[in-house]
Length: 335
Length: 251
Image (cartoon, rainbow over all chains, first blue to last red; front, side, top):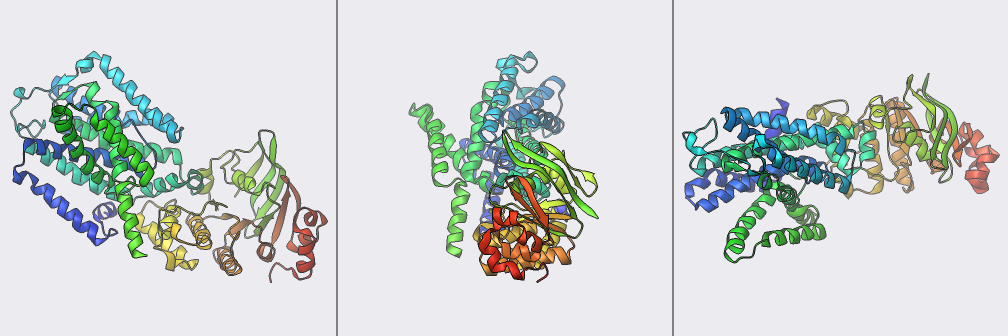
């Protein structure tokens, strides 16, 4: 009961925040009624997906301060589990998604246990390495289609198929991911107030102090890493049904890992709204840059340049991202 | 009853002996001061006892259990809490949230942790500061917050590492009142490293003096103040001239 109450209780935020949040939430709920272009719809779905990736990343990377640049491997595990189970055994999404999550969490324990002996940059680099190794393994593994990947062909099914999550119109996908998005917010809202959330913030600040407060630092990190993983794997499973065509180079690339971390940091690592703000800024930007500047003006790779500039700006101006700037301005006004 | 036994503790960093063959006991309900010049190995001793450093040799017995090889978080769970010299508290969190981090050791429930934190802050007369971020507070208040956080662990023994250093006389009084409360009202055994002699001589029952990693003296404050080795190593002639006649643990 207390868990539920904490998840639904946002009362420690200023009223302005809650008003803005309510406005955004209602806009998201009625967005499909406006009948924007399919491009806008696809961008919105991407926004919701990346918000969820970011929320997951934010638990370990934001509250815990452990910069993880290997989230793509868990996108892959979720996406592949769902694809393989659907294609080979016709297992519906609602079964394969938790199965994929369990695989991802299991894998996160296997690599998280040794990796969290490392700190700072060494940890970040090690996460990149494990993610790339897993990607390479998938590229030569015939059972999962090797480098060609897997394709879910929608003609075999009768959309709208709510069990297998096979739809013709994007609006169905939109509402499914929007549901997960709201659940994700409630979860993180609980997490940040939970014992683990408090322990993690103490760890981020000073590990020796955390230890002497009775916190098993290593285990707390491993546990939180598993939570972050579960988020990412869930969206990976959704990604498989939504995109219907997954291949290692695309689904598990380093770009995805970096984008996830970058968005959370841009928006504000270690805050509830940060990853959502980050995704809200970066995803439309990314889509626009790719669609117009990339494809039409022939400026391929411009999005990468922009990311690099953003990384430099965050580290130079405000390490706590956009949300950090908002909070700073607020505190200045209240003084 | 003996709460803490340190037996022939030695800690080496490479060739440097930071603690050399140190032995002493702390009894239940005592207040023990650790003094000595900078670099004498006082903080290293605390780090060894609290499990942050693995010891080179010797044994540490706490509450009847050998804790020599235990990790810091396991030691904390047994009821041995500490504060840090330089570190203040998690600046990002409010005072109350900081104390809650400590309280969460004994409960999973947020509301219980919060209630306990409020109680501790009330006891230490910090409740007015509950909702400030720690980074916004003066050093004296930050140090008292770290004490409050440590109390959240419900410790049997509390190690305080220079809680009064760098504070003005009024602030020292406040900290001293907190320590007295912890010791007499809550019945927690206290060990404190301190350079503020006026305080440590006044409140300690017993004092252990370290110099170059070795224990050079141990005894009640009066005899420590008269010990020629302690005067030579640490107190200095002037201190004894000014304070020598009027030292007593209870005044």
